[in-house]
Image (cartoon, rainbow, N blue to C red; front, side, top):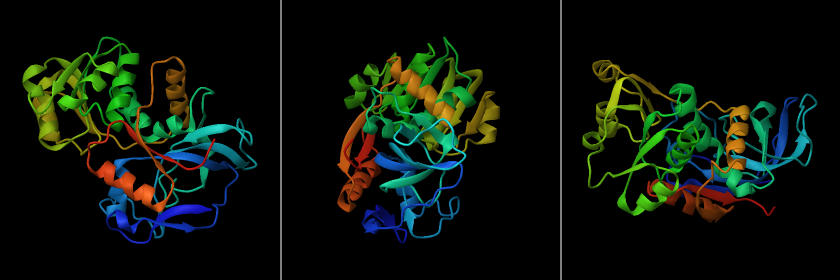
Length: 313
């Protein structure tokens, strides 16, 4: 099969296209004929070597942790999925990722793709959508009427978080640059803060939840908008315990745990019209396509998700 691999850490030029063996599957796995994948910041952070202590993979590494396609083979213990089924997943974090024509996926990480959803839309959801869900639902226990601040609402995780929060009946404020104001409001945000012109910590108060996608000074200032007993959840860096204690809030760092049943809940929201993957740009499945996609992701200014189309439907 064709795959895009890296044999060393470095810039986008270490991405190489080559023929590799199709993965073997276990008794509780399926072989996914991959139709689309997407780009997440973890992809180029692993590629650059920033996460080599946390994820000590052996080379060669196939990056990518979003998959959408068709069941090509199934292990003998797999139930609930048949050959030919359209499925999507956030596979386990291994060195055999989704920049490939075939991917081995554990059956408990799979969810059916709704009939009305394209492979590209399905590929845009898993990592970013599950991250947003687990931040808001699992960690923050979001409920109707909560006031929620989502930083960088136009980004991959942010745009899903706005939609998920609104599906729970929350009041949502979001930061972004001025050019993304209409986009962020179209996702359902009730309050927009142009971070280049306004200090969100001076405009907002008495919030129940903050989803921090930035870290640093943004994270530290976020405590000021929370009410006592509020929750700050970060995907950028672990919060400082002393800061959380000082403001009387619960703070934590979330590292995604792939779950097929939660993907199914996101698919249900899609079918209800309450969640729509926003695809910013689509690239071809080629060495150059992946290099261009990584370059765009590394600007931190991509709107919505960057998708890689691997083959035709």
